Image (cartoon, rainbow, N blue to C red; front, side, top):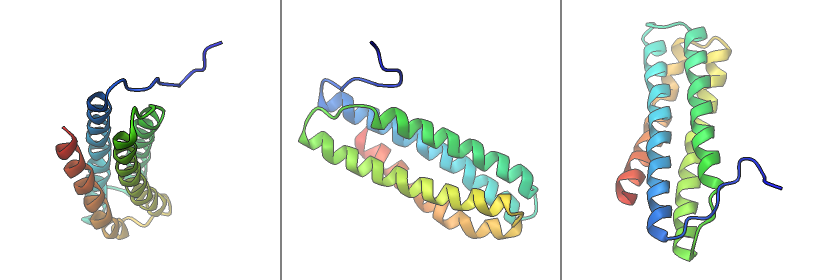
Length: 134
């Protein structure tokens, strides 16, 4: 019996590290999209409804990257450390994205700009992690 959605272990630390880097890159892209949406809404260049859709899609993209990564078995103790770093960064990004999406769905258009700095910080953390792991 096969279990859907399970990914096997990475055989080497290098393979795991590269998968972690790819995850950080994908997550940074999703957060970057969200950041652009909050900036545009803050300037009055888009509606809260449109920002809400963009933020919801970015949140789904982030969750997909996170699920794909966390389903991998780390091959050794050093990979456990990498896993912890990546999941911490993904969690912070998810929190920032969720807060922005909630604000957008409440119709807080120009207030969305207040979420830009948290999203930029999360994006920067993910990009630095991706560079270090690549």
